[in-house]
Image (cartoon, rainbow over all chains, first blue to last red; front, side):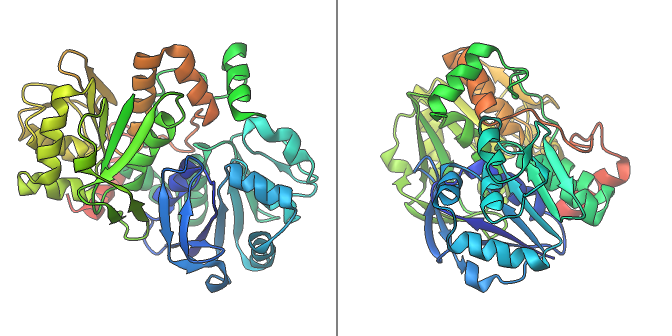
Length: 212
Length: 212
C-alpha cells in the first residue's frame, strides 16, 4: 500500500506529521513524501525545512493520498489550479482513499473532488470550503467510502483521520497497536479545542491572529 | 522567550512537531531547532529529512528546552553522554523549564537531571528510565517547578506537555487560543492509547514490534 503525502511551501507541519507518524508505523505501508519538485520545502512558520526527495511526477498511482493544510493550501486553492491540483485530480482516479487534513480540503475542493459532499476543514474556513460545492460540517473526520473521499478538521485532526483509515484498511487491532505505539491517550489540559467549546473571546483572538 | 528543540538522528517526528506546532504559535516565542551540527537530520523512519540551520553551540542560554525521543534518544542514553548531553546539562543551569517527550526523558536522565524525581516516558521504557534514579509514573505530563523539569509520556503526549507549558508561562487564554488554533479536540476512533486501556494482545504486539 503506497500512501502519498504531497508537501508544498507554507504548509502546517502537524497537519502532515500526525498522519505520517500513524501511517508509517503500519507494516506493509510505504509512505512517500513528495512535492511539485524534489528539494527544500519550508513550513508556514519558516522554521522547519524539509528536504523532499520525490517529485509528484514520480508518484503516479498512490493507493492513498493525504493532503495537508496551512496557508500554502489556501494559496493553492486561491490560484484555482496548478501542478499539485492537476496531479491530485489525476491520481484520485485510482486511489482507494483521497483525503485531507485542515485546509487541505480546499485543495480537494479546487480539484473538483468535494462537489455535493459533506466535508470538513479547519473551523475558521467553512465558508471557503462551501465555495467548492461542499457542505461543511463540524465533524472531526468525515468518510465517504463510495466517493473514496475523507476529510479531517484542523491540524491535529489528522491523527484521528489516519487512525480511522488504518482501522478501515488493516483492522481494529493494527490501529489500536499504532495508537498504543504513539501513546495517543490525549489529555488536553484545557477544553477549548473546538469553536463550540472555546470561550467567545478566545475564538475571536484566534480569528484575529489568523486574519480570517 | 527562546525555546530550543535539539534534534538528532533517528528521532521520532511527532515527538517534536507536536510541541513545535503549539509553541511556535505563541506570540513572543522564538523556537529554535538545533542539532549537534547544522545540516541534515533524518527521523527514525528514514523518510523525513530535516535541514537544521543551527548548531547546539549557537544556542547557549535557551529559556526552555524540549528534548524529543525516538530510537536516537535511546542510543544517546546508551552511549552515556556526548555533545548533546553535555549541552543539555550546561544549558539546564539557566532554563526556566527543561523538558522531554517520550524517550527524550532518557537523555535528561543520562544528563543527571532526573535523579530522585518522579518522571514519565514512553510506557515501554519505564525500566530504562529508572536506571537514572527517576521514579517512573504512567502520568501523561509530570511538572516539577522547583527542579524546573517536566517530562511527558510517549510521542503524542508532547502536545499536552506544550499546552501545559504555555498555560503556565502565558496564561490560560493564550493556551486555549493555541489549542483552538490547532483544533485540538481529540476524538480517537479507538481507546487503546495507554497500556492500561489497550487489550493485552495489542500491548504484546507493540512490544514485539518495538523490540523492547
